[in-house]
Length: 223
Image (cartoon, rainbow, N blue to C red; front, side, top):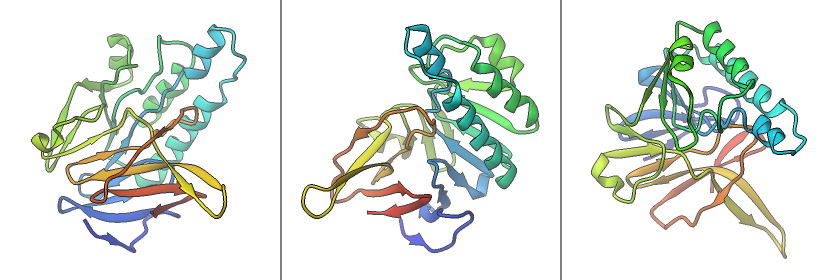
């Protein structure tokens, strides 16, 4: 899996994976050139409204920011398909579904596919109205897509997932440290960072055979 210098958007990094050209984008998405497909994971839309329901005063800005960023990305890449690797919506449906439903209507020529995550409890009628196909697993070419990592990923060919919101701590001189979101590529599995603006991180411990690409100041960098 060799990285190359071709960049399709500012800060992006393109690499070869399983004979396919994948472009890792600085906001946590992946552009699959051969299939004209955007991969996204863990948007967690509606999370702010869920917190407000339980007394935490958070505005709707995270959902609006995430939807706006995705809109600009669709305009820039013109994908034929958007593959959502689970946890599209954080909890029970609330009013923060409406901006995303509007985005689906705006780009109704795009094929929307949701690999169901553990947080997704979206009523079938809303999925149908928005033109979203929901599946438990998707096999496409060299890749198998699910929401969560698999202990036996090698049994799937090359497995792509999300769920854990990977991040890594980089240490500098003295006690300086920085936690950054990242793409985590193991020999048989890639774990996507969370795309949503209101998500946490889970610190990973990569092995020597793994590759880690951090999202830092608008760029994707291998560490």
